[in-house]
Length: 444
Image (cartoon, rainbow, N blue to C red; front, side, top):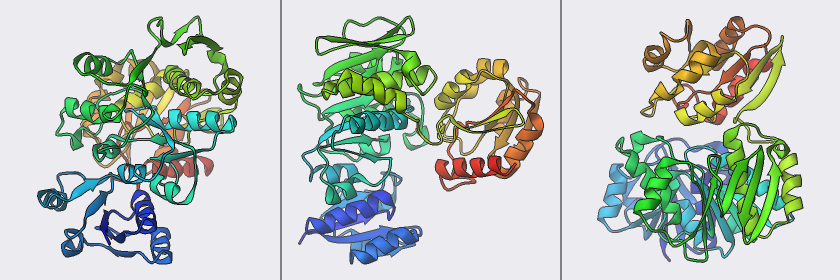
């Protein structure tokens, strides 16, 4: 019996354990931290051996294959030891893909991948396709492969997940954009991060498709220097395209498969230029999967958007409160500020990942009346914006940040949580940050 060791007892690790057990592996799950109660229950119910708060190397270095949580870097000593012993270390995405023949649509990018994933899944479900959604969203891909029988999957894929692939392939790959993010994981080398994102196309064939943002300089430059076998399907807001999707006169035009499909942007329930691009990408993928035009239009009109992404929380005393906790990098916050049509109290801060805030300066000058810092180390934010915004206040939690923002705002303003940073200094993750923000707003 082959031995499968799994590093990390979270969603992806436990899902891989369930699939591994089903496929006849001897499975061992190891987590250096605490495993949450709900996952311990699953492991016990499935009679899967596990440990927490330690890595017992003797039980890991004897594995035939190791599935590693995307949160664990390749530079961790245990991972280096595994590779020195020529033990294959892969991601849950790679492991699960070995056991399904489903059509895979993989979506990556620095920003927009969650909205694009949810939007495409919504379109395909409304068209009555038997489709699952996984990756960074919902139940793990591996668990769904073990327990469901979907014909296709829409997968949101982070660069960390893509770093752990060997043979995984998406029939349709979507690359929403590439801007500097997670550079702390890539030795502060943007080129390494770009290469990581492009792993989504490394195993594609001539019969596969790569949908990409033709306005994105990093993507264009990579495609000039590198070959991909997939058929290239671009989208753009800046230029008309003979093949692909473009915007003209507030109407999206899509030219693929020798057909033209037009759609006014007023059809979209999600607002902002970035969401026009997300809709273009999702719509082209749906058309490549032969979804009818009318079904696509109806789906776009009924889509409600992603939680924690420009989510309207409440309007209190004439002030709008907006939860954009998923904005964990500067580019995502740029989109959020660009969408603001009111004077804004901006809640920002957290764990800096090598951020350069200078791109935000014109938008902050124009739209931001006060800054509320929500992080343990706010020096960089204060140094960048201290001369641009008159009021900069430091706070130590979501409840305090919301109370301060309320005092600084007046009727007709917006309070925007768009942190541009990771959340791990004060919160479990960006979802926890967003939920605490919403709870604080609702208790005002």
